[in-house]
Length: 233
Image (tube, rainbow, N blue to C red; front, side, top):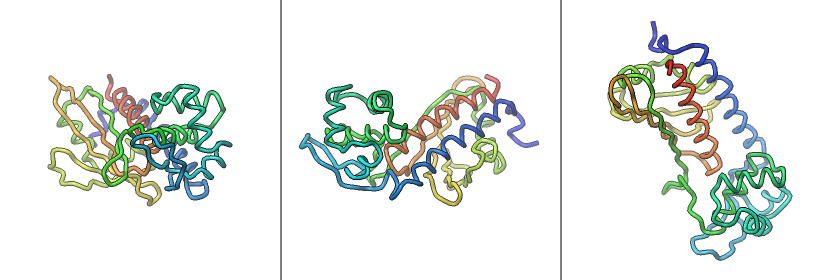
């Protein structure tokens, strides 16, 4: 018997479409010329702390039909410059029928150009996100599942997961690749919460862009929910 026998297979099967969705979104980004997350210059409106967006003016215009000056003005007149990333992306998508990935790209660029802090950006320029949920399982049992080499084929089907830390370490780190392409690393922080409950934090690091971070942050939130249900919550 493997540690995953404690998981409900019907609920666990939901991991397949969940992973397929995030893989499809990544492939969509990779299929674009130069990649949506490639570095590129853009206009600077002079706002304190402003910086160039990840995509050049030419790339954002090709993908959305408008350049950065236009998007900055439209967002200022719409949800406003203080709007959050999610508020801007949702407004862009709903108002101008811009596909999700490009809408997120607009939000990232506008927030940079107007001097807003880009959440999750690390000192090396990469991005990190995390999601936390208390799961109905003892910390030792969940650790056993996560350290089992066969478990990840069910927990992240289609992705390759490799342990990059000692099994005995307090916060294990796993490298994730998709068809041989690195997609960051995940640190798993576990904490005991009463009897047979474990506070679980999935921290995904070394992501290429803020939009990539938003994609994986949503993914890990849903992933933890599926795992919660698979544990019989």
